Image (cartoon, rainbow, N blue to C red; front, top):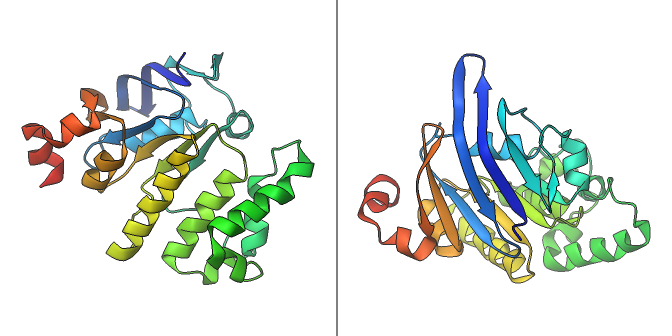
Length: 235
């Protein structure tokens, strides 16, 4: 049984049709990558799934429940959590306060402290800076904070939108090591990433979007060797 099943998804911005019949699945523990040029509809897909955009047509089924049209906070509480493009941490709040925001939808308050300890163990720099304002962190540290905040919600599926954007090459490698570690925990990941080569190295399966439609799909290893994909996205 699929963890996420997106069926015939259509999203429009006024007269502009951003998604036109997008369908795909994510299985438990799987890493799926959405590959495509800027404007192809990758971020729109994530935002529609997470409740930030309302689909014109289609269904979004998560954990065997139809969540189409749900509010974003309800989607998050269900275990489907997005790390948005640009991180969107709250710069004036401390690192600790940002992390605790991630746990806000949870009702198992007794486990929150243990999860916070786990996040600090995974990200020692966040522990060192836990009382600093989040806006004072470096770009890489802010990305760690955004991911840590999402993990505090205990996601079953984590959606990552351009996690390496704006980071230096060494930090990009660090971010992908982090994502690989999350994958090893068995958390399913839906990944939108400008660095298609890195994304396809990590993913199990991938879908190629062009102009709001899926034009190609396959296991990530095969797509890395596909002439069309190499020419368009891998250089």
